[in-house]
Length: 392
Image 1 (cartoon, one colour):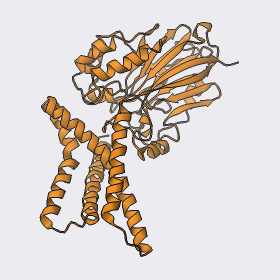
Image 2: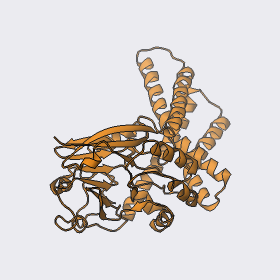
Image 3: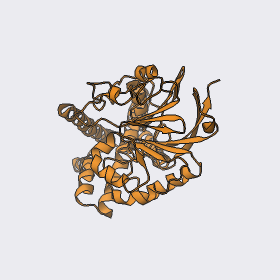
Image 4: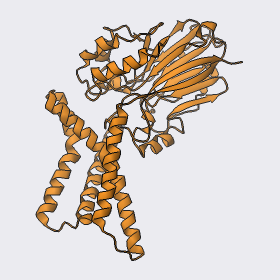
């Protein structure tokens, strides 16, 4: 596991540095900068921004103040903007090379300014979009649905990532939107907290303002393991939120199953959690909360190690058990274009939305918050409003 993480981190750093060097080279060529001193100054500035996010990450841990938080936010936005700028740079080079191929003269400076301006505007929209979650309405068919659940609402929240970017004020806005929906129950499918703590003690009072007739339920995601499960549980113990740690509860005739995220270096035996005839009845309607949109890991399989790279998405175990609805998150629906195409590939098309196969359905939420850059392009953050309907 450690070697895998080291490989991924090294690859990310290589892409980060390589991308910024390519950006520097392109600026020099597009704007015909020939003076060595100016070139070196531009390189120094770009290098500073390239290293800003890892530096800011360390700073907010060691010196938690307004300045370090602002630097952390700025560096996060820069990383997201660089992705857009890189796409703009590549498009500018393509146009310039095509023009040369057809022996047309073009003003590279003008082309660069146009594309860079579009990238900056697109970035601004992405930051605004990330802080403007929408309400997504879905209807899910469910066998043997109790009468008292017909017409009632369930709210799913996923990947809120509370921390430095998404503070108590942001959470207050989310809680108000949820309460305005008058839900029977609120289900939080992991990554409520980010890997950065961001004054976590401020969240408990706000979390206690959720209004749901049958309560608020929570399962852990991968980021709860990063920030520290003990710290997360200390915060949630001060709230009315019910933590489901590999357990099943009855919710007015619906079996609610909460499977927590597997921590590093451990495995999970799902056959000891869901036991037909013991604590689970296949004929009764059921909802499975599981952070990753993948088949729940069987004995001897680490769901942590297999939650990123082409996980198993046949959902055969849940289907064979007779589970009706799985609620997941984790993917952020890619969060940033063109990473949206990558998550679609990695999760075999199960990176977002409602998918139904017979009596089994899974909904993968794009999530409320973000990880890394506080911006979203190519998708929208969401609060999911679920209405259950009986299968005729």
